[in-house]
Amino acid sequence: MVFLVAVPLSLGIAVASGAPLIAGIIAAVVGGIVAGLVGGSVVQVSGPAAGLTIIVADLIMTYGWRVTCLITLLAGLVQLALGAFRIARAALAVSPAVVHGMLAGVGVTIALAQLHVVLGGAPQSSALANIADLPHQIANNHTAAVAVGVITIAIMFGWNRLPAIGKVRPGMIPAALVAVGTATVIATLGRWEVETVALPGSLADAWNGPMLPESGQWHGIALAVAAVAMVASVESLLAAIAVDRLHSGRRVQLNRELCGQGAANTVSGALGGLPIAGVIVRSTANVRAGARSPLSTILHGVWILLFVAFFAHVVELIPMAALAALLVFIGVQMVSLAHLRDLRKHHEASVYLVTLLSVVFIGLLEGCSSASRWR
Image 1 (cartoon, helix red, strand yellow):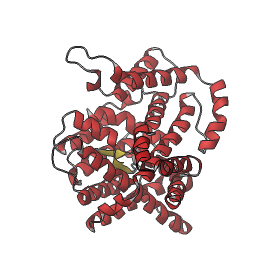
Image 2 (cartoon, rainbow, N blue to C red):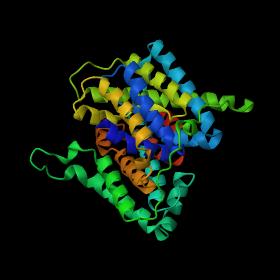
Image 3 (spheres, rainbow, N blue to C red):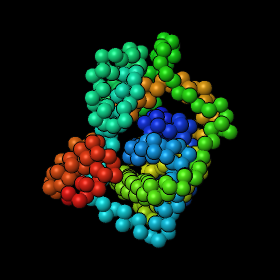
Image 4 (cartoon, rainbow, N blue to C red):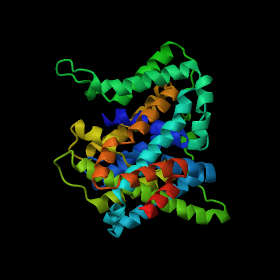
C-alpha cells in the first residue's frame, strides 16, 4: 500500500526540487530500508519530503546537484550527532505556529510552481514571478498537458468521496496511484503528445553522488547543512508524534528516530538521493493499511527498488503533467484550515499567516526566521 503511494510522490518531489528523477526513487528506497531499520518509530515512513523542496531547489540552483548531495550527507551526520547526544526534544521547541506556517508556505510555493507545468510551461524562479507569469501560461496552455492535469486533480479530489461498493471502499486503493495511473493510461492509449518521465538506462548511469564544493563556498555549505538538518529533524519528529496518535503500539523513541533519519540522509546523500524526512501522508497510509511493525516500512523500500529495477519502462510512461498536478493538489492540502482554527484558539493565527506569507514571498529560512523574531 505504502509503496503504491510512494512511487508517484517521490518522483513528483524530485520534479519540484529540480533534482534528477532517480534521486527521488533513491531517497524513497533508502528512507524505507535505512530509516525503518535504525529509526525509533514503529510505523513512520520516511522518504523525500515536500517540506524540504524549496531548500533543495535553492541549493541545486546555487551549488549544483552533486554538492547538494554532499550537503544531504553532512546534514545526516549532524542528525546522527544530535540523536546520539539525546537532544531530539530540543528540536520540538519550535513554535507549532511557525512549523505549520512554514509547511503551508512551502505548499503554496509548490502549487504555484507546478501549476505552470500542468499548463505545459516551466516554473519561474520565485512565487511572485510565477504569479505574474500565470495569465500568460493560461492563455498559451498546451491542451494535452492540461487535460492530464485536470484528470489527475479531479480523481485526487473525488476518489475518497466515492461511495463504497459492498465491503470494497475506494480508500483501500491510494488516490495518488489511481489518479496518476488513470492519467498515464489515457495519455498512452490516446497517444497524447506530453512530456513523460525519463530514467537512467542503468544503475551505473544513475549514480551522481556527492562532490566537494569550491574553496570559497564552505560558509554557505555550513549554513545549508544546518538548515537541512533542522527542517528535516523538526518535520520528522513532529510527524512521528502525530502518527503515534493513530496506532496503539509502542510510542516513538525520539532520539533513536533522529538517529534513523540521520543514517538515512547520510546514505541517501552518498548514493545521490534527495534529503529524507518522516512523511505524514505515507505514514498515515501505512497505519490505515494495518502496519504493526517497522517491517512494513522496510518492505515498501524493497518493493520500490524491485519495481524500478524490473519495471522502469512502466514508470517512463507517466506524464510529467500528472506528477505536477499531484503536487499542486498536495501543495494546496498543506495549507490546513484546521491548524489555523486551532492556532486561533491559542492566539497564534497571526504567526501562522506571517510565516506562510514570508516563506512564499521572501524564502523558507528568511521567512521562518522573520516570523520567529516577530512572534
